[in-house]
Structures are given as structure tokens and as C-alpha cells.
Image 1 (cartoon, helix red, strand yellow):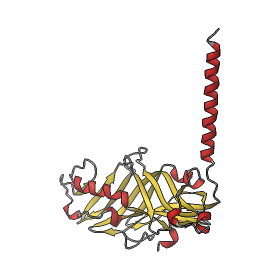
Image 2 (cartoon, helix red, strand yellow):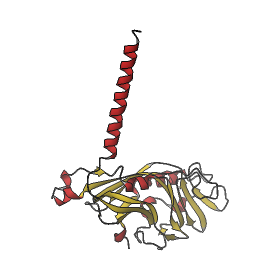
Image 3 (cartoon, helix red, strand yellow):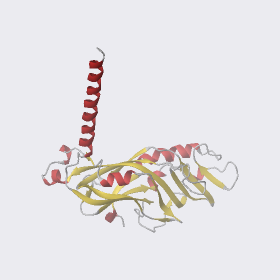
Image 4 (spheres, helix red, strand yellow):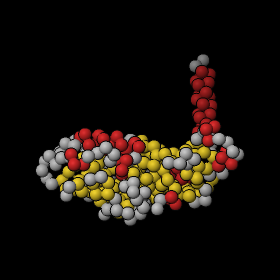
Length: 261
């Protein structure tokens, strides 16, 4: 019978610890105290010259882009609070806040696939929408999403990003299965102002994605009439693949939809 008090003591401690952890979790979920507004997050592609304009033909370097597909997940957005900006606090003295647990963040974080270029024309694709704190949004981080559902008829099956087009008259495809984290920064030092149904856009800038890539060196080693730039490609092209994949980390920017002509 002497063992029972110790047992009850351990159970009480475990219960108390569980309640404390639950309370901390609830506090984290309710951490946003800044006033909120409705907003959207979408994505598109740009050759640099068209700045992501819808229905603009996408031509980059030696490649005419026909289609661009990408998967996204696990989105987080960071912002300067509107109240701090109105108070006149210098940006250098402000700390970025996260909109984790806001409806916009939750909606945007679910796994999705997007078509950013179709038949040579750029277009927009929705990532998420919902309430989020008012303020100036400086950066958005997200993970690429490798689609493992469906079949080979889906262009993103077992892939996270695919770009198809033509180089020197040959059908050319770049694809990766990486689920790396990408950070998109606002080009403006003050960020993108989010207030009253603002739409933020993640722009995949193909001129940056293909920076330093000489498509004239791309090989069709197996002589099937197609050029493939991918992991373990039958055509080789590993140097080109590594360069494009490394460019990904700096190829996405954050913009206001209204600034995209």
C-alpha cells in the first residue's frame, strides 16, 4: 500500500503538466492581437519584362516557356504591425511579427498545386484567403509541395515544380521533386501594405530562376528529340539542373497585385 501515494503523486504531476502545456498552446494560437482585415495570397510567373502580367507570353533567354506548374504548402507571412507604423516607429527599430494562426495563413498552408503558365501565357493562381493582421508584409516563406497523388497524366505527379518549353526547336522540360523552403521578400523596404482586401502575390521570376543558365549547352544525350533537365536525367544536364535549383531560393518575390501590370 505504500506505493500508492507515489503513484497518485505522479499522476497528479502529469495531469498538471498536461493542463499547463494545453494552456501554452492555446495562448500561442491566440497570440495575434493586432486588428485584422480580409486579404488574399496568390501566385504567378514572370519573365521579368512582363512583371507577371496575366496572358503575357513568357520568353526567357533561349527558352520559350509553354507551361509552369508548382506545388505549395506550409506558408508563413511576416509583417510590421500597422499600429507601430502609425506610431512613427522607425522600421529599423521594429520587429517582424508572424501571422501564424491567422485565417489567411491557415488557408494558404494547405497543400495545393498551381498552373502559373499555360500554353505560353502567364496566369494567376489562388493560394489562400482570409483574415490577417493589418500592416506591411515584408516576407513570405513557404515549402514546395511534391505531389504524390494521381498518376503520370498529372504534370506534377512525383514532382514539386515543372517548367516546359522549347529550346532550339526541341521540347525541353525542367523539373524537381525538392520540397525546399523558399523565402519571398518584398522589393519595397516598407513591404506590401495589407489593408481592406489586399491581394499579395508570390511572383516566380523566370529571369532569376534561369540566371546564369546557357540553354544552348543543354543536351539530348539519349537522342529522343527532347531535352530533360532533372535529377538523374537520361540526358545528363546535371550542371544545368543544379544551377536552376539553386536559383530557386532567390527567384520568388512578394508584390501587391495592383502593382503588377
